[in-house]
Every structure is written in structure tokens, then in C-alpha cells.
Amino acid sequence: MKYYIVIPAHNEEKFIGEALASVSAQTLLPTALIVVDDASTDQTAKIASAFAEEHPWARTLRLSPKGEGHLPGGKVIQAFYKGLETLDNNFDFIVKMDADVVLPPNYFETLATVFANDSSVGIAGGLVYIKHKGQWIYEAIADKNHVRGPVKAYSKNCFESIGGLKPAIGWDTADTLLARYYGFEVHTSKELVIKHLRPTGKAYTKKARLLQGQAMYTLRYGLPITLIASLKTAWKLKRWKALLYNTQGYLKARKNKLPFLVDQAQGKFIRKYRWRGILSKIGWSQR
Image (cartoon, rainbow, N blue to C red):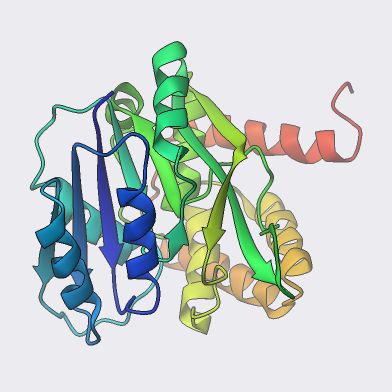
């Protein structure tokens, strides 16, 4: 199967070399890979360019600075689309990849097999691990049936059906929920261990955390689900201010009447799906 990889990158000199090396070691190489250097001020561009010179299927794209801090969500996806615009539409699946992950050699060959064998699978990926006290452990900020944003692959049909990725914070939740809304399955290959060289959220600011709450509003979660989801995140991260910031972000977005990322029918589906998941966790799935 043919697949393309787009890697948005900003000041990733510490990690991008290892990330790219893990791609070049794949048993099934990409048809095309593009590193979108989002106005880095370090050696990111130099490292990516050197890699592209050695691999004919890789290239780079440099974005000029716009005076904005590097935040999760919107800016990352905007960079992703700048890269996607340089590629054609002749692919079987598309990959959004972070610049700070290391993949096992059979990562994309395994995903290609998953997509080829089951057309109902819309999103596929492995599990994300971080290094803790010398051991690689699962980064427990999401359930193991959720494909995380650092390395996410979409079948062409799914990508087009969900309207691509939303250029906003919460994009990697919106895509999964919309994929399910349109009848696609999400497949997690638990044997595929993704090594995340930098734990999620380590460099994110208070502003970024406020945007998490905003995302819950724009996805039409409603306040009760937002509070429950935020409490769960705060508990897993052991960062209790996450609950406060998420709630503040949600309430501010509601006050300002920000536009929603999903329509009413999709929002209704999302709330029902979320409630079903919450109730199943406490043993009420059959009630």
C-alpha cells in the first residue's frame, strides 16, 4: 500500500534525527515523507534537510514565523496541511507523525496489513510509551483502544469522510469521534510500541491547558462530561490544576460562543458515545 507521512516540527533538534531514522528503517517505506519545519530556531531544519538529501522519498518545507508560540492543536494541524498541500491524492493511507517518536521497524507494514484486510478500519496506530526510571512504560493519559496523536494513520476513505483534521485544539479527539460517527473502526495494534521521547504536555503552557477546555466545548461535550473528563486527566497526570484550567477554558468558550467543530447531530452522537464509555467504566453498561 502507498502511504504518505507529514511531520510538523518546531525546535525538535534533540529528537527528530531518531524519529526520521526509525522511518528509514521501516520494512515498508513511505512513498513520500515531508517534514514541515514550523519556523524552528534550532537545528531542526538542518537535520531534516540532511535526511532528505539521503532519501529520495523525503523532503522538507520551511514555514516563516508568525509571532505565535508553539501550541498544540491548531498550529500543528495548520503546519500539517501546509505539507499535505504539496502532495498528491494518490495514497492508500495518510500519516500525521510527531518529530519526537521512535517507531518499531514493522510499524507501517503492520498498519498497511490492517487497512488492506479490513476496509472498515479508518484510523490505526500503536501504543505510546515513555521512559520512566530506565524502563519504557505505557503513557497512561488515554485508554489503550485510542490511537494517540503522535503517530496516527488514516485510510483515505476515512480521512475524506471526516473532512480531514480540524485545525484546532482537540483535533486528535475530534477525528476519532467523527470516524466512529461515520461508521469507521479505530484499530490499536498493541504489539506496536511507539517510544515517545518527550512526555505529552511537558512543554505546554497554562494557555495550552485552557485550550483543552475550549476543545471540549467546541466538540459539544457539555459541562458534565467536561468535568468528568478533566478530572480523569488531572488524576492521571497528577496535575490538579488541569481540572481548573480545563473548566475555565470551557466556560470562557461558552461565554464567548465560540463556533463548534461538529454539528448538532454529531454532537449528540459524541455525548451519547462519551456517556456510554463513562457508564461502562463504573459497571453500568447494561443498565
